[in-house]
Each structure stands twice: as structure tokens, then as C-alpha cells.
Length: 459
Image (cartoon, rainbow, N blue to C red; front, top):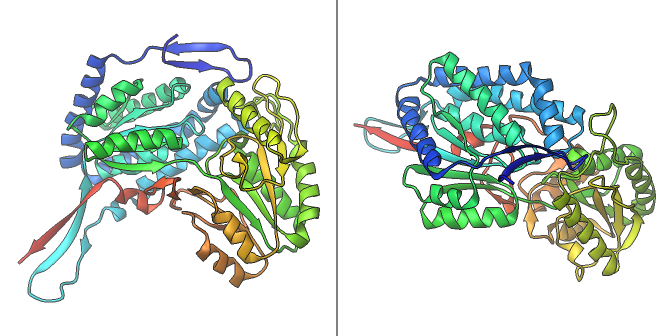
């Protein structure tokens, strides 16, 4: 079997295989991207770059149904959510098309003494490598490629081995936009590379930076290689985000938000709410309502109207989540809801009474498994929320505005959402701390990661 293949998680059928790139083809891809960078960064105007990315946004919108169907086949995302992902990717490209020139404008520095002037000018670094995951095949690429292409970098894109068809579709969009703009081929190059080839690529002096979205293990391996070769790296890794409920005047609404925050993308999202930390006087009612509502979302055909929960992304993902849940049960968690997986269709599960001695206390459950925790105070909620190796996102629900901001300040996470879930937007920065990674994507901060902030001082 080839390294890259589309295996329908709903049926288990292998639909198509793609050959891995040869070493010679990989070298040519790198040279092509480097040659394009020379023109793209030094000759093409910022307005030309933003125009190209705007066209990429348009093509995503024009092909949204076809693009959505591809990722339902690749990783099982419900079709309506797949359409939403394509639309979000288009919005991200358009955001950088609209704001790129302002973000890259020269920044004047006021001198404290002496004469003359000084400013910082931002420009691309060169060829960048993006290593992307399977769970959001278009969105993850957009938030890496959009800002960096506008900044003047060129891109080599290695997608997840189970997403070769969406990778090819994205590459076709860029190829069309590049040809229409008369830009040099190589601004965006898709590569079906294996891990050994990626290691060789990172070591090559022509490559200037790496962005990885994926597991801790993948991030650590790439970061080690990048550090050895002094390459800038951005890491967007796992999460075990807390959902803290301290007070509410609408418990049913809070339950609905909690369920949506856990089940989005079949529960396979790094910044999904995974640990539900509830104040004592609300816990029993929340647990009953949440378990009932969560259990209603039984897995179904991802192409069917109204499906909220499709199959997990692969046999390996199903086996991994099953093993985690079985181990948690063996170590003594209380099971409030569960069911038997059929193929990759994994029913929602709710567990409680998780203690620090259990593996489940520190692991990330990448699928529709929710863990409930009872706490007696704000301080205990914060201690529990922070007692994790991860620090990606977090959710705070309270009717007390001062409490909300106080808790937000004390949570060790890159993002805090107060009384809202699924509120991501192109202008909002995304990223975490601790083992959830380093660096930021989205918003204007994404434009700061892979640019040369060159000081120019004039007498």
C-alpha cells in the first residue's frame, strides 16, 4: 500500500492511493519553492500577493460542495460541518487578503535621542514547511498558508497521509490562482513525503522554518530536528481544555454549549472542551442534563442531513479511543454513559470520578468522551483546570463578570472563552502554552511568526 491513501472511515473501504514522492521529486519541489521565493518576496508587490490569496478564497467558495465531500470521505466529518470548514478556510484567506498590506506596513520607531529616523520592515524568510493534520484538512492549511504567502514566503505542504485528496484539491486551487496571476510556479507546492524525507528536508539549508499541527509526539520530533538545524518552528499540538461552570441563569443553554463544544468535528478537535469542571451546587443537575443531551448524539452517516456525530477518522483512532476508555474503566472511573463502537462509529461516553492517580486524568481523549469533575470553589476549579500538561484553550461560564476575568487571568492557557463556545474567527489568534505548543496562528499574530523584522536606521 502506498503511504498516502483515502480510506473511508464510514465503510473502511480504500478509495484511492497516492504514491509517495521520490527523493529527486522532493529536491525539485524544494528548488522550485526557493526559485519562486526569490521573485515572490523581492519582486511581487504585497498587493499582488493579497490578490492571489483573495483568488484562493474565491475558489474555495466556488468549489465548496466538492471540497466538503472530499473530507467526509477522508476523515468522516459530517457534511454540514465540512461545508462550514471550507467556508471558514475561505474567510481566513480573505482576511489576509484584506489586511495583509496593513499588517506588513513599515513600523516607525520613535528615537529617544539623536537625529534621523528608524523603522521596522517585515519581509518573508524563504521556503517554509507546513506539516498538517487530518482533523481539519482545509482550515489548518489556510491558517498557515494564508498569512505566510502574503508575507512573501513560499510553502511546501505535507498533509496527513489520510488526506491526499484534499491536499491535491488545495494544490489545484493554488496552481490555478498562481497561473491566473502570472506568478512564478512554486509559491505553494504539495508534497506526499514520508517521515525520513521530512527529516532530510528540515536539515536542508534552503528551508527556513517549519509549522506543525499535530500530536505531542509529532511536534516533539519535528522540534528536535528543527532545533538541531536552527530552524524557526511553530507548534500547534494537543489539548485537554477545561469547561468551567461556576454559575448560570440558563443551565440548559450552558449544557447545550458544553455538548457542542465536545462534539464538534466528531469530538476530534484539539481545542474542544474535554474536562467539565462544575461547581458543587450545579453539578448533579448539570451531570444529568449533560449526559442525557450528550447521549442523544448517536453516530450516523456523515452525509445524512442533521448528522452531528459521524465516524471517527480511522480504525487506528477508534482502537486508540476504545483502549483509553477501557483502561479508564479498569482504573475505576464511573461511567455515566457509553456504548459499543460499530466499525468506526463510536457512541458518546461520559465518565466521572476521575482521580489524579488515573491515566484519564492527564490524557487527551480525541473523540466523543467527556469527563465530569465536581469542585467546591473557584480556587479548586482553577487548580483542577491547570493540573494538566496541556494549555491550549479553556471555557469559563459564570454570571459574574469580575469572576470571569479573574478566572481567565489565572488559567494557564493560550485562549479563554467566556460564556461562549465555537467562537473562532479569522481575526482571533490561536495557540497554546505548555505541551500544547508555541507560537500563534490566525489574526495579525500569524504574520509575525515567519517574517524578518528588519530594522532600518537612517541618519
